Length: 364
Ligand code: NAD
Image 1 (cartoon, rainbow, N blue to C red):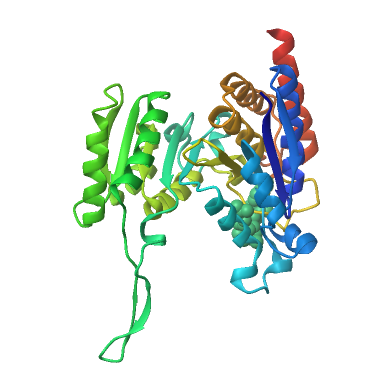
Image 2 (image 1 turned 120 degrees about the vertical axis):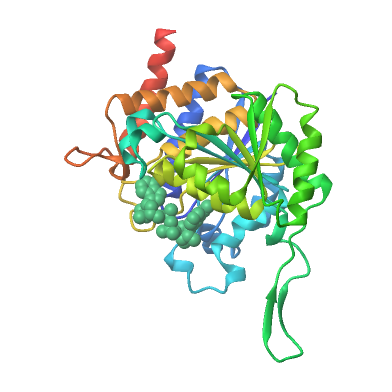
């Protein structure tokens, strides 16, 4: 059955990196005989210009009908003056909530060829491959009551509520156990159970679920220790699962271990494994339209899309191998180039990945 992929190029460098990713989708579809159909829609600033809102109805309909969605990035200085509720980034929040994307998967993979780009010593991070699974639709970012109120003594007081139901914890933990089972079989659940009752419950529910996954080694870590361990000895981790706020912070910390934001893919999934796939970086207006953007984060997002939503793990591996090959060949965009070396552009990097894919097929 044909699977539907929706492309949302977005703003800034978004269209440039998605154009290269689209070529990669078409190439693997041909190489692996995958019945995929591609469509495109507007999201973000480009949608505001063309259709008046950041997440138009036509885009909503196409997104709901798609099996997987590939997004470039949204936003830029052109729309910075708009009120928060009308800005391009609202489109992103709206599509996440329309699809009920409760799980955010952020791999931090450091290709050994780029170990010198990390802020940590190369031996600590070379070959790093960890996956952070962050709950995305609950926790303190959404908990009610919330607000800023005037107290009896006249002082203003801000407050938020950190809540998780058993069901919310269960669904993110189950996904994390399953992912760990397909990797090294190690899951670290991150909480602050010594202080916060909500994460005491988190720990109890995750521990209980562990009985269903005897093949996965589960351990628990307080978030302060997890932050420390991520920069002390990150290779000890395989999969980390945590709530929304801790995941927000830890995934950005892990991202920096790899050195370049231009290399990091991400996925957000719902219960039907429908997913929104996107590079971690933004629309980079400072380099937009100059053929300088690194398309590899978006191309690696295509690999995640094939693996998690389109049931095509072999095609996903082929893309990851093709990326490793181009790095071995010494190709680097400006963001990952070593001093004194020359950089290739966005399109040339796309060309090289396609050529590496084609030669894998010829050699197989
Ligand atoms: P950014 O990620 O766009 O850029 C940060 C820096 O990294 C810039 O110097 C940029 O040139 C560089 N960079 C980013 N991606 C790169 C790539 N693929 N190749 C080479 N260099 C790359 O973050 P920012 O500057 O804080 O934000 C710019 C705009 O993007 C803002 O409007 C912001 O709201 C938006 N944004 C969107 C998303 C998203 O769509 N998911 C995420 C973050 C920021």
